[in-house]
Length: 430
Image (cartoon, rainbow, N blue to C red; front, side, top):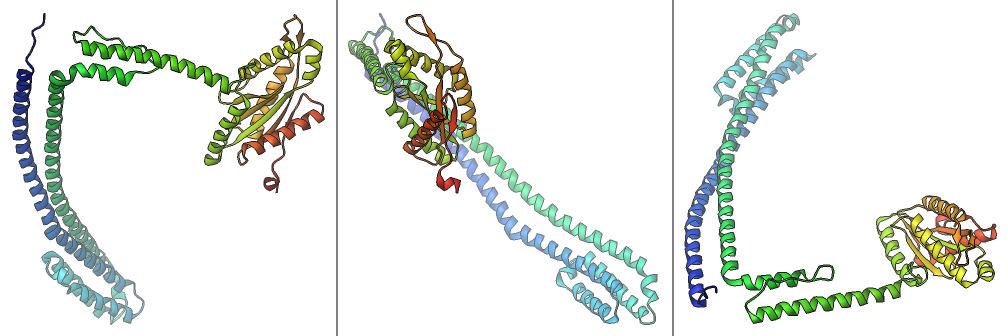
């Protein structure tokens, strides 16, 4: 016999375990949160330095590089200009740019800018005596221009390197904080798992089995099986759950039988007219919402009254059942089929244009015409059918059925045993 545990003593043990677990968690959690706060401070410091120092420095480098590039372009313009006025104007711009504070602050840029200014001034003085100076000294200018270009590249790279260095520091601080955050999340998850395990083991294990059985209870599942229980109350609840499952199965069976009687044709097993219209309305709404094609059809067995008069109503019922079975075997699982009334049948072809539905209907019509149907008296007959099809994507169900019915009667007037397509509505045809 298992040893009985006093509830108060068990609660006390669980309380001690939870208290110890909570104390360890709070201690480790506090340490990790403190480290996270320090990392956050580092991120903020690096971000402030990036905003207050690095960004202005990068802007200064960009401005310096832009001025040097303009200096080089204006020097090029001194050589390419065709009039003395244009050359003097370019030299004037060179003088202005060379005296810009951003250039003067940079020792190498200031030296090269001064050298450029002196060189261009000397070239213009020589050019006043003849244009040959531009040709003879252009090679010197090319070397000077290349030095300016190299300096522009070096200055741009300096700015990028400075930004990259600060960004790497920020990224490193963020990465470290992310790692510690993952540790904190793992710690919280571990604490939660241990807490749930202790809670399950010490407080809710007997009730958990009953709760799981109730949540899984359903007509599509076998009856719940419980291990023997020493508690009468638990045993009584488990017995009640088994009885409830038995009632659910009985009620589901009754519901299915009633649904079959309400939605199915008793002779052919196809859905009846009322249920077909309900399902067709839903399918047309879906097709209209997503702009998908859908086709409705009406079919009628040719000379069915003559068959009834010749062989009797039992033979007619056998033909209807055989036709329905052939219909279900020939069409797609997604198509809706119903016995509309008497020897009339209705179809709905989702995701099918009028031409695609016509091809399906024509194959079925030919298969029906080639199929022998065995009657109860041993005779066999072949029966044909006429089919009318109409597009239904933009029409309500009753209008689409009426247009398909008109196409059906057109098929009968044309000699039966054929598929006729309804013309588009007047508003679409126009």
